Image (cartoon, rainbow, N blue to C red; front, side, top):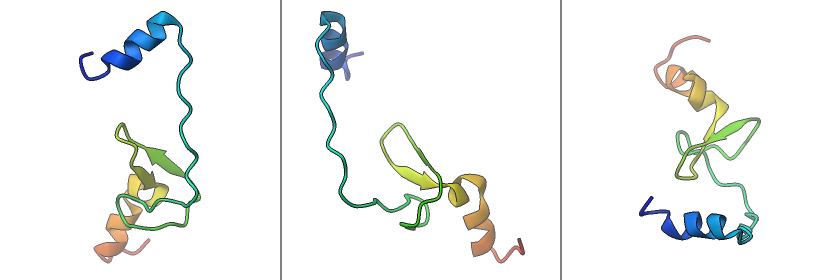
Length: 67
């Protein structure tokens, strides 16, 4: 709560949430660095991870496991 005090108080006061700027470029995957997105997940910090990294496909390819 301490880290998010401003946001919590703003919600309790009924203040509108600030809009976030829309990124102009595609950020790379935090796992493999790919910028080709078919599907991705975003963690609590805002890092995007591609579907291949989430499912372990990237790690299996790096290890030489046939898919």
